[in-house]
View (cartoon, rainbow, N blue to C red):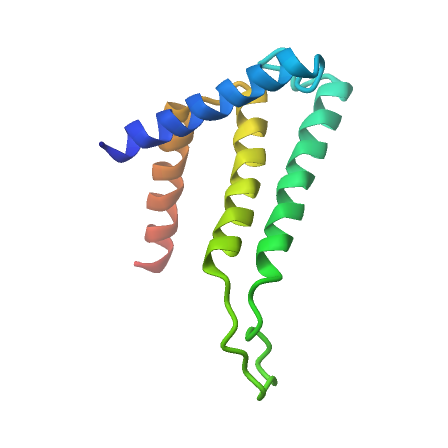
Length: 123
């Protein structure tokens, strides 16, 4: 499966989750896409983004040896838990993109454009 197809699949799974949750708990997500210029929409997008950041912080809690001055290094690392928290974060960020009306193709193009831009900085 091509990378772009996998990205489309991830977007589709997240949309499926959002729709399922809305059926079970009405109002969990707004109708998509939201009108980004509206204050309430921006508040929703901000809140969802902050939830994603919170999940990233949970993932970071699994990294024990990041302090440069630490000498008592830990062998403890739960890769599965780390990855699960990272995926939780990604799910929130995908929800934000979906609510903002961004699809997999637009994200992929923006990613490639940014990649090329940062490569130019180092060449």
